[in-house]
Structures are given as C-alpha cells and as structure tokens.
Length: 155
Length: 319
Image 1 (tube, rainbow over the protein chains, first blue to last red):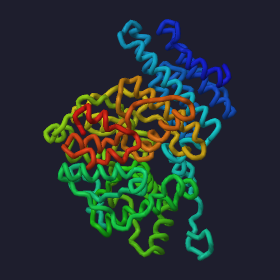
Image 2: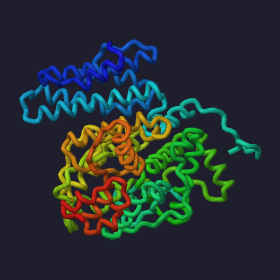
Image 3: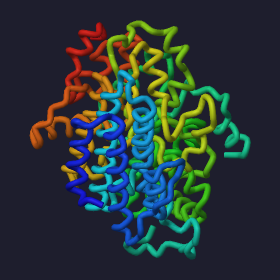
Image 4: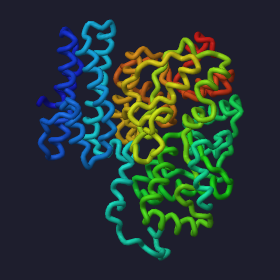
C-alpha cells in the first residue's frame, strides 16, 4: 500500500500513456488503497473479501461499519466500479477517453473525501449521516429527566 | 390532531397545490435567489406558498452538533405551527438542510421517547402545542414540483426551452442521506432514489435541457467544513466542478443553498488559491424552471448569483 501522497499522484497520472483497461484497473486499485488507509487508521485489517465482485465495495462496507458518515462516499465507490466496468467491457468505445477522465475524477473525489476525513474526522457527521440519530439513545434509552430545574442547561 | 388528520398528511393522492412554505434562514441570506426563484416559479405555475408564521431555525448543523434533541424540538416547532396553527398537511422546504432536519425530527419523534419528552416539555415552556409525529408531511421543492406539475405539466407549460443548456444535476448529500429518514424514497417507479436521485434530471429534461451523466451528483462538497477546513472544501468542490465539465456540462443545477453558495465561492477560491479555473455556471433548478416557464432572468434572481451566467443564458435565448 502506497502512502496517501503517492496515491494522489497515481490518480493524477493514471491514464497517461497506458491502455484504457490497464488505467481503469489502476484507478480501481488506487481506490482500494485509499480505503485501506481508512480501515488501517481505525485499527482494523483491510478485508480481502469482495462485494458484488469488487474488493473496493467490501472495503467501503468495512470502513462504514459503525461510522455512518462514511456512507457519504458509498456512491463514489459505486461510480468508480461503474466506470471501471464501462471501460473494461468496451475499451474501444468512442467515449472511453471521457469515461477514463471521469473515473479519474471519481477516484480523486474518493481520495479527497477520505483524506479530508482522516484529518477532520467529523467530515460528513452532521450533514449527510446525521450521526446524532445513530449516536443518541435510540437503542439503549437513558433514563428520562422528568422535570426542569430552572438551572442553566435545563431544557 | 386526530388519527384521521395524520392519515391525510400521508395520503399519496393529496393536493400539494397549496403548501406551508418554510424558507429557512439560508433563503433569507446567501440563498436569496433560491427564495426569489421559488416564489416566481410558484407564481408561474399557479401554486400557492403559505409561509410558516413566525418560523425559527431548523437547528441546522450547529445545534445538531451540540444537542440533537434541541434540534429536534426546533424543527418540531416549525411543523407544529404549520400543522396546528395554520392547518396544513404539507410543509415544503427548498433548503436541503431544513428538509433534512425536519425529516430527522419526524423520525426522531417517531422512534425516540426521550426526544418526545424533551419536545413536549420545551413546547409547553414556549407556549405552543407540541408536534406529534405524523401530523404533517415534509417535502422538498423537487417533490413539490414533481408531484403537482410533473414532467408532462412542465412540457405543456413550456414558454422557453432550456435547449442549449447541458446540465449536471448536483443533489448534495442531505437530500438523500441517511436513507432511513426518507421512508417515501426507494419505493419503486415514480419515487425518488437515494442512490441515484433523478427528480431534478426529470424536470429539467422535460424543460428541454440536455442532462449529462454526472457521477458525483450526491458526493460530498465539504460544505459543513467550509470555514474550519476551507482547503478540503475547495478541493472537493473543484473536483465536482471539473467532473461536471468533463461530463460535458455548461451548467450545474442545484437544489440546496449550502451546496450552491459552496460551489460558487470555492470556484472563485480555487482560482485564487490553486490557479484552477473552471467555467461551468451554478444555477438553482428553480431559476432554470422559472426561465423555462416564461419568467424573466430578473424575476428568478439570476443577478443575485455569484456565478455569472447571464451571457450563457442570453446565448441560449433565455435572458
């Protein structure tokens, strides 16, 4: 697994001079490495399993376990897989160059989100994941405060 | 409100022609053009917006961060006024943040007894009737147009086609996530999808626009961190803008004031800080539909956007 800075460079360089199928595979692999960083950062071992045939999707599921805000990059992962499939299944398609460019931008978004989240853990917590509704006491309700006291902090 | 009224709030065949309108604070500030164009569009389409009396902040991200139950109460007060004092069965919120928070409050009050207790107590202190889950339905501006007018209605009312505009639709994150607070979505044909939202695509295509496949339509823009970590937000936004251009778009259509202002402001910041220039224009979907329905560019507030799209709209015969 390469350092994040190298992964970023790799995403920028993917596609330059290499055949489309190879470049698409490189981008998928770089996406996996981004998620490996996230999983390792949480003290876990990155899975070698696949989901729907892709390790990237299995890694995303692993990374999102107990961390609902990580679902903010779920569709980004799926778009990377989608563009990989488009390129691999029809590398001679007239739009392959455009598809490869988009795959690169999708991979870059995954990198930027995960990199940002590793620096700023709350990225996505209070907007798309609405973490409080997962984190409050829906599952294990705390005793309900019955009456206000009129003191500061009293609701 | 009795059980019959609650049932009406969920009635799939109910009339959305008149709704309680909850603009929220962003539409009075940075998102003023969204408010202007939503009202102009309603006028063009013959729909009635009844602004919620004495509305308050939905709790936004700031309150939710500190105390999610206070956020639930704040959102519940808006719904209580709309349902109990104004007699509405539907509240329409164009802002993704407001929409999301009202939906979250609805979910919270249906599933968390402690939140119900806090809401009841605060409502009593504030002197208004407490909101009960199920009294009102919260919808987004996209649902509102889709349900009342739909694609066929847009086509039949079309005054100026959006032909010439290649649009990437950006929905942002709060319109679809987390999916369990949007039980009406992912219900098969006709319903909105949380993984591939399409209501904005459907409506703007019906108005004549060419919709491009945009792979980052729900991706994070870093909006919540735009002040605390501006560089991350700028990089995320630049990537969104570049992806829109790579998709062939000359316009990004938005349906959230936070996304909209983030895209506009970071587009400028990216050029200053990183030397990355993008030219794609950022326009609210209500502005685009308003133009298509015959409103002038001034009536839909194009001049209030930071992103200067006037030349493009003139070239397309829309201004």
